[in-house]
Image (cartoon, helix red, strand yellow):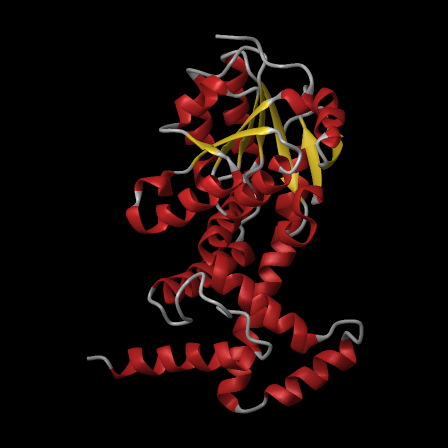
Amino acid sequence: MSAPATEPKQWNVGLIGYGEVGRILAEDLRKQEINVAAYDIKLRSDQSGRALRDHARQLGVTLTASHANLAAQSDFIVSAVTASQAVPVAKACADTVKKGAWYLDFNSASPGAKQRAAGMIDAAGGRYVEGAVMTSVPPYRIKVPLLLGGSSASALAPLLNQLGFAATVASDKLGVASAVKMCRSVMIKGLEAMVIESFTTARAYGVEDAVLASLKETFPGIDWEKQGAYFFQRVIEHGRRRSEEVREVAQTVREIGLEPWSSSGTAERQAWIADLADEGLFGERGSKGFARSADWRTEADRILGAIESKKRKP
């Protein structure tokens, strides 16, 4: 097994998870002619895997057959999967990770989960660094604000920034960067869930205009029409991933001895919307205009229609 390349632009980069985040990173890295390989469990599916394979082929991204295969050939691994898979993916890579290879855990997992994943990678000779993505990736792409943590974070940060990342070191102690991310998500993901619940209920009672006017008076710096549409769109499109993240948020709160009542409710609301999306309520995933209505009322009416339909079922 060859030693990892020392120059970032000569790295073989391995992306575990070829969803929205993985594809964006692949695009921005391939623009720099960096070698990129990827693995995603969805590649096993004829339907969902086809779009991923087409995307990879267009970019020149090599697709591998397994986590282990990807780890064996990568100088720098980015794990960008759902929160619940952060530890299992680290375990799957540990047996074949190159000695000295970097392992950046992009996942929105609790500090405890990051510490468990780090133990596996470091024990195998890799260099684990936790990453906390501090806002939505698409607007910023590879330059999304990224906090790093762990004993290898200070060494990795300048190398990442040579590739176009916007990485800063939060702490050399594992868990600090993730704690910042998780505590922020209590607010952000909670606000998403509250807006969907508030706006949909207001729509049902016919008082949405009065509610929006009141919110504007209390928080004049927020365009609640625009923000509402954005929150509906993001949760409809990514509710499953968000619900898993918020369950990790709840675990983060629980780890300090505080009962995560708010976070647990947020996770349930996000998962509920994801279930409706999976049933096709909001249209076909990936279709033009999917969940991007300029008027959140369109989506609220669909939700209300689904509720009425379920009421009518015996």
